Image (cartoon, rainbow over all chains, first blue to last red; front, side, top):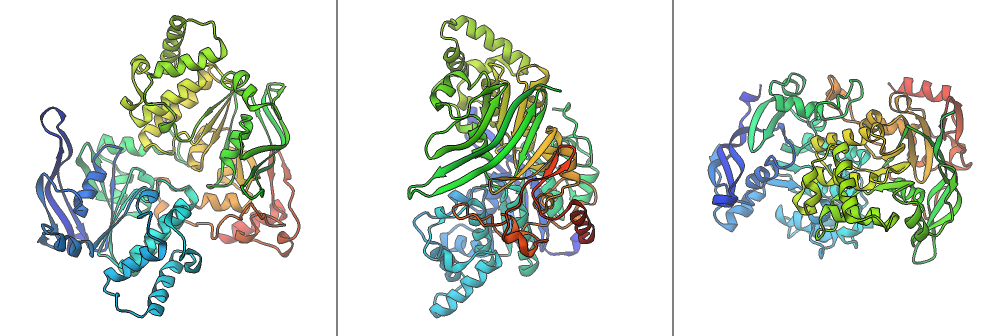
Length: 270
Length: 336
């Protein structure tokens, strides 16, 4: 039962408003949520429904206009840079566009070394560091020897996204925010990346917040699904409940928008 | 016998790198698209889908070079023609193309109507602007797009609308063949559905006569196209009708692709995704035998030595594997 698990990340009345007066846009509108430890939570919605804004607020990249975020039962405090860094040790993210998520001047070993430093491994001997990095790379089926002297832009999109997972493997955060991690890669690499993410979750036991527009994908990975429309959660519940027996018309529409194999795809309802 | 709109025989195209290495991205591809039919091309990134699309249009600009083979559009052989001639006389009226990144395909400083003027005047310089505006309005109404879009700048349109506008611009001269290269992969599911609906209606509206649809999303191909061709490392590995290719694939690679499908259907959560291990071969030095041998579960010792021809399985079906249909089917049964 999810209610028995302890709450990992929750929020009450979380709101984000962009602009003022005429340009006022409510991106996220008084959402309440409660993510439990060890769950895979999906947030599903169309483009422009406020999914990414919510993710940025959870990460602490932008400040909410209203509302509170609670981390492990306590009010989240990230007012100083030091506290923010402390917070980021327990929450990490994978973004949609792998090409723009790396510092282009840093080589790949520097990317991975940073992760080791963040976990307090600065004083480890060099051989040990390389061993840790090799282990992380082999977890995601990359060869560390081939990567050491390369820059991120020399990799393909799928490889970059897998390197991102290697980072998460090293950092071992409590919460992972995956913001459409597979929308820029093809169907084949998507399966690989999803498999790795799920394997990683089993290993570390972290909470995964999965943000996507593809309800099929949400159904495949998640325990709990939140459906988001115009900045509000319109429906939430366990994946089977929401996706196989949707109550809201918006959810029904989202499901009918995905092409299927064993059922007829009704194109007339656009 | 239906009219053949596009026929390709043994087409080979290559890229020439800076160091004079030849990379054959499309090798001995033959295909046929009849009037009123649509053909889907599936495969992972880098397998030559987009190169094939460019080759079909005769878009041979360096580093892409024509090597051999024939492209016949409605009885007219365009292989080996100068790309500039092709652009003037064939692109738009005979064959047309929807690019992968339609988001960036429109010049942000011009109104949508300008692109249509451009396309129409390239083929008929004596048409007046007024005639073109009338023509564009009519076309947009038939396509079910709002007419106001014509007077807007591309930045004012949403992603889905931009994509549909690009489709409208590319079909405005009613081409015989339309090549849609991943027209919906940058969109969310709801906009994707609108784009697909529009593409499906194009043939009924008489804007196009046949279509080639390129994507890596198999559920989409299954719902849109009549036939499916699976490509791997520049070669065709399987040709079949959409139903056969998706529900009963023969080639181990097509079978592997099926394992990566995710659809929100009952009982799917228990099915494990089966990703194909390994990476595609480097086409600078293609392997001697079957190109899929390195990643194939059912690999035989001779696979790595002898090259495999496209094996005809009857009924318009073909696959590239040395194992017979029966052996493959038994192997798949056993795997389950």
